Image (cartoon, rainbow, N blue to C red):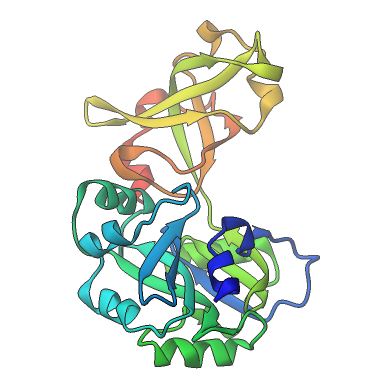
Length: 284
């Protein structure tokens, strides 16, 4: 049990890196869910506990029991002692931000999808094949992650495929618990600059972020802020130069209340009037 208890430290988990076409040896292309990563442990005292990347060691299991679907709670509670599942909390058809809301405020409909079984019944399984992992997940009453039997070899084609499948992206894996690489889909949107934030640190004295929004009818919907991308095109401009301008941003989907996931500056759209920056484009 010492290894299993040690595993609760977040630095023992595989940390996905960004994929590039020059990385070889990929054996699985699994669907990446838009969710909240957690590790669930059944320890030798027959207790269940869970930790997340941003929970700072807090046991998330009591909160999970309030929002997880009953079948997932039952499957986890029935795991043999010395079992560790690494997986994703998600809500089918919704965003990761909503998982955090339900974890904090209560609510139902959250699912748990394991994508790895580092330990089962005190046996170290980090080097087993994907086929063995899938069989173990089935024995624990979980489905294995969805995956592609054949996949494109370029990031652009993978992103396009993720968009077509309406998923967040893919995890390309060299092994069950090693060599994980992520590819996320991205979209673009035209937004209006409605404010700025001053730069800090190396950007002191320059613009630090552009606050962006779109029209929804006659009202404005806040889309968040852009603080990265195309720095040479906007960092050294004055606030009065950028207010009201239309900017095209690259992003990874829509969060709650209209905010964009990880927006990046692409270019100025001087050819496009502000009134064409509508909320409808975010739903395409």
